[in-house]
Image 1 (cartoon, rainbow, N blue to C red):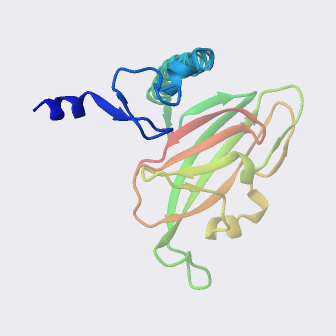
Image 2: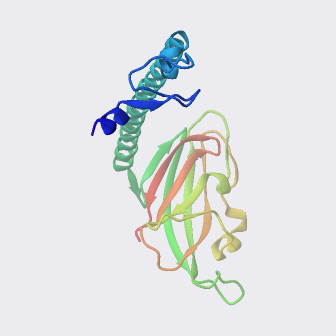
Image 3: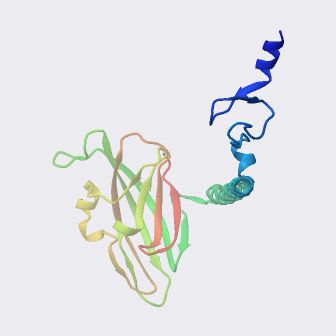
Length: 230
């Protein structure tokens, strides 16, 4: 029993291998320092502790800055979303307020008065037809120049058809435009005068919600819309 207690209270010296007390700081045989590395190197241990503290503080500071940056980005994203919502609301309001005129209405835009006199749908004749599943729509239009200087009209850049499916159609060669080649709307309209002619479009057959869009010029200047009755 006494030997077991003595065995439990001693350990082997790592230098000389002799038995020493567990609590001994030095070996009584070889005078080796039995303390752990940190106890034997207090200055280095202090420096390491300071380095670890600095690294830990840097990590905490970097984490906090990252959290702040993420918070700022989140606020920016929320603000951008709000601005986009405001812009979309303005666009939607503009669409709701967009006036659509009727056939026969005379509408003024940029020094010109536009009137749609007649709308004719066509499947073509013996020698000319629209593409399969398409049809032609011909508009007889009067454009009056109210300015004191001439205006140039181009059907290809100023006139379009659109439908309820979101399709847009440019000017096309149709039966009416061929029959009335000398009465087209392209060209100069002199001051204080007007021109009447046909302009045609090739559209998908049986589409609904047809509207004619006339732009003030090929560079902008606003536009007007006419409901074509289908």
